[in-house]
Length: 500
Ligand SMILES: [Zn+2]
Image 1: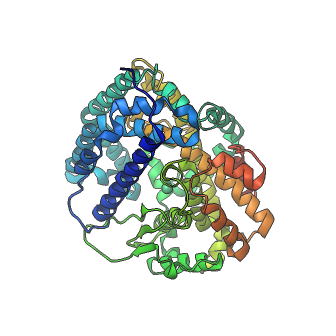
Image 2 (image 1 turned 135 degrees about the vertical axis):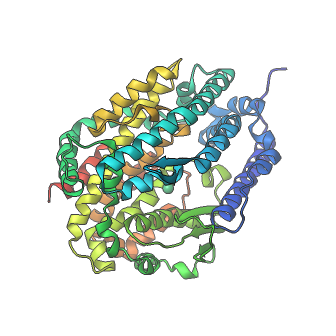
Image 3 (image 1 turned 120 degrees about the vertical axis):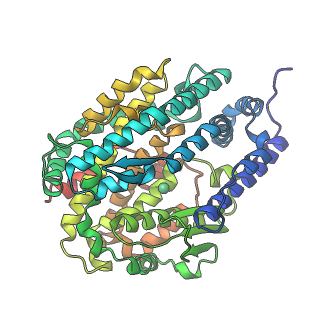
């Protein structure tokens, strides 16, 4: 019997169960990474909810996809769950390898996961090169065969779902504004910011690493952004007060938000990086921190606080797919809006005794430009990668596209691992555009110190209440009247860099 579309009752039951599935995953994630539970038991949760992502269910929901955005989101969720299930063993094997492998460099044993931090902290260029080469060898020899197997499993599964390839599947799951049109905009942004990037990156490389952009190598990049000299300006004991003060300026009393659970306790197995786990939206949102201080830690806290306030202010009355699914460019956009306060000179002066806030803003803008250009190249690469019959032919294309964008040659060993599943790259890119345009709007409406006005806070809460009902493009249009333009990121960066 050919599959028939699900009835409304069946769809409701599906929504209900998907809601529990995601809540259980978020809770397990929270318990493990907060250091409250040693094991990380995802398998029993997946087992319990296997029926949600079986290929027949995926196909059945696919029959109703033209029934609107909400059903399309349910179908995307089912597809991603199915493909994720097929490659879960690969992911587990890779995670196990990453945590087990020790690398010997100059007679010193370094855990694989510590290679990048070690590289960023290494002042000696020759040693950085050595660390980079060892990491790439391991990636190539031990991990890439697993990555390749996973890609091939996905290709087969996508064809079983009756799509020619992964890109075609996503052309059905996402609007063109999040895929093909976005890629076109990214190509244009790469062109329009090329000279700006070359000049800004050259200046930063010279001051931080002692070589110009033309001599810079990939092992110099983590060093470039590590910049230890700013560490003392971002002390660990002032992180939380700065967040509380920032939210208070916007009319939000963090301590009295009964649905926001601040987890500040020190635990030996707690991850040092801040994270947000929206276990119930909006009723139980965890914001977990173990402050260590330094710019990176501050950025991470404010980023996660953006997710936290978004989910904690989301209206209870929305449907499951408007709270838990939907366009992640929206929640990433809110996260970026708060994160980028930490390189806003006016904000730095208000919150910290900060010398040379403008110099810091220039570094922030250069970093933003680097990452946005990197992601622009990545989406162009991923769009090509997912059409290739034999992905091993894509190695040189990876080096070409990323090398052209960054003027620094990447290692070809990354050509498989540097791919985000589900075109998540599109969410980050549009979040950057969303942030740039929304910030410009807030500045125009509430002044350059918009972040310290109650009116801006009231508007943000109103928009946060919409959860992920609207796509980033739609929300931006509703608020500002403009379409999402990646070029706005170029303007945002240019404004800071050309004032230098
Ligand atoms: Zn995020």
